[in-house]
Image 1: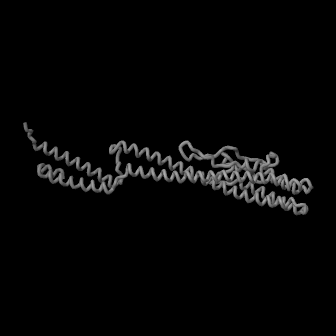
Image 2: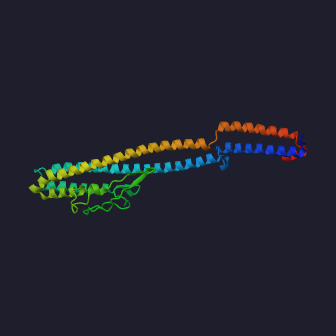
Image 3: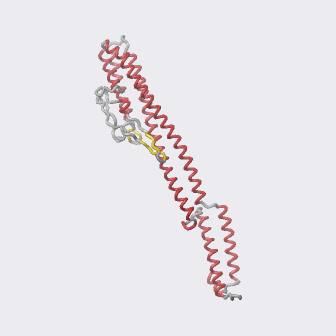
Length: 304
């Protein structure tokens, strides 16, 4: 049994096919103009969800890298200050060895003690080093200078740790407490740098045989112990810098990989899209010509 195809049916079929061809052509044009394969969620729901996940991962990677860069800056400022502290202590040791010589008179000893006092102030000044306006040796009390210049040697910071998250569940401490190196002076008698430096100046001014003996033995041994501790702390800071640098390289690689995956997921293959556009445009033109032989002239004129 045959079915009669009416003129209206033919017209509706042609219109439906033309609309479909036009829609496909418009979608391809949007992909060409935007450079994106995914122009709306309905294009490919799975790919769109994948693209969103990749963007979230990239955002997390960029935040980790920001944390790493800040950690590198913090430890770089810390190491620079510790390096200057090492120079100060080297000069203090030279003065201590010179001051322990019995040939020095009161004037010479006073001059050496005065320079040691100045070096002590330099130590406190270096302990007040900052990075982007924050004190790097004050624990978590970064708005507070650890030490006030002058005779008072009390520590104004805290013992908190400053950490930076550099990965999922991974954090790195980037700070050093000045209290562990410089201490709180003679009042605390903690054998830290400020205590030792104050005792050195005091023994130089005393000028007694016992004081001279202390300079050559006790004070020198205490200073060397603190110099060794400074070297240990600098080694820890250096190891932290190396870890942060490695993390930065790894995060750069992760970001590059994530961007590549995101591009493959949502970006259009321009060469392939151009081929699709040419094919669809030719098909649309052919459909228009074919429809001209089927649809009545009045209707075709209306469509145009």
